[in-house]
Structures are given as structure tokens and as C-alpha cells.
Length: 344
Image (cartoon, rainbow, N blue to C red):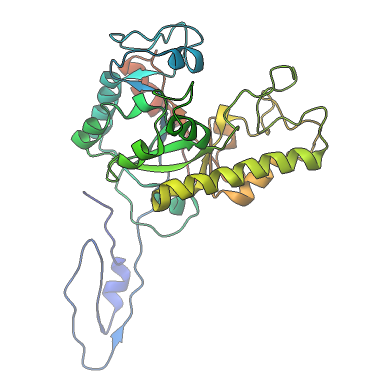
């Protein structure tokens, strides 16, 4: 894997009067002896201005549909086993086929992109020194649906990419307990752990209730995390949300161990209660959720470019099954050109 070169500025080399030793994990150089002393040389790494982040949801490979699939994901529309896209025009347009996914990774590979880990991205976002590929990218998959892992690992191996997949503890618990609508549709804890570590790692998406559209009778806001109910005080609302997230991370850590990055959060429905066009946290004018989340997560993914870099928020480009390959390429290059993935 080609990586950025760690080197010494030319001016330092020209004016060194003593010998030096450069030790680099990636590009070791032989030491030079000096009669009097050895001068320690500070190493540097070339700056990386931006790291694009892509998000997929369902990635299907012709898996027969189930009742759970209809109810949870496709709003009553069947997902045909031979369909390239699972009813994208009428149901869930976030769904892509393995064929589309492979074409997109082939383009990324041809363009020189190399995937980074959650830890690498987190260090870069915090402006820490970290070794990165010359053209880094972070690939993510949300929710933990079983079909997203069916047929995708060989594609990742072929093109040399790895993925951070954001997990909902409610879904994995339900699938493990063989309960509807999770059984046979979401991955169990053991199925998640069986994914090869070279291609798959994990991070937090939601706990026991956070991914639900939980309050259908609350017209002002139906989402679990950003919505303060009319019957809740600010203190009750904050305790409910912080407790669910804290417990959810502990549950996922208990099942997934060191493969879970607890410092990243992909916000369900991309609603962190700080966007003017999205539901906010009730009457709380301080936008409590965004501020509290920033105290808990060094990296918070949403799909709102103007908020990139604000309170640890980072922008992701969500890939849709209705996009052509040309559209995918144009959207990625356009997002990069506009600086949406900049360090902030």
C-alpha cells in the first residue's frame, strides 16, 4: 500500500553539521555516524486537506425478500430477488446492488483512492499526526442489515478496501433473539463478528430505540434522539436520550469488543437538532443534543455540508441506488471540489 512519505525538509539537511538518524516505519534510512553527537531530527508528514466519506445502506445481491424486509425497509414494496435495485424508485432509494457497489469501488480504485480506518480518520479530524495514503477515503455502511454483508466482502477484497459499519444494537439484539421483524433481515451479533476484520470494523449508530420513528402521534417531531416530547421536561428528555446512547454503546462494546470504535457516531436520520430544516429538541433553545454529542463523540457523521467541522460534525455523501455510475462519479468529484470533506 503506497503511503505518504515521511521526510526531512531540505533546508535542515543542508545546514546539519552533525550526523543524523531517521527512523521511519514506512521508509527506513541507514544511520550516519558522527564523532561528537547525534542531532535528533523532527519528522513531519505531508498535510491531507480532505478525506471523502461515503455512506451506503442496503447492498443487495439477489437475496429473496422477507416479510421483515417489506415492513422495515421498503414501505410495503417487495424487494425482488432479481432486481438490481430493491424498489428504489418506489421504496428505499438508498438501496444499491452489489453490481453497482462493485462498479463504484472499481472507480475509486482506478482514481487512486485507498480506504482508511476509523482510527486514522479520527486522528486526522483531530489534527493529529497520522500516516495516511496519498489519496485517503473512508467507506461506511449503516444499520447492520444482513444483506449488506452478503456478497460484499469479495468485492472489498478485490479492490483492497475496508469499511466501517455503523450498528444498531436493537437490530442485532432482535436478530439474535430470532424476533420479527429482525430475524433473517438484520445480522446477529455472531454474524457481525464473523465478518473478516481486514474488511470490516464497527461503530455506533443507535441503541435500543434510537433508530425508530418512535413517536408517530407527535406531529412536531417523530424521531427518538432530537425530539423532546410535549410531556417531557428538558431534564427528562436529556436523560432519556443520553441514557439510550450510553447504554447502546456499552451493549455494542460488550458484543463486538475491540472491533467497535466507540468514538464515532453516525446520527440516525441525520438529525442532530441543529439544522433549520430538521426537527429540533423541543423548546430547548440551546440545541442540547448537538452540544452533548460533541462531548461524547470526537467524530459525528451527518449529511449536512455547511456543518462540516462544527462541534465534531463531519459530512458524509450518501450513495443512492437511483444514481448512475456517471452520477456517482460526478457527485463525488463535485463534493470534493466544493470542499465539503475538508478538515474544517
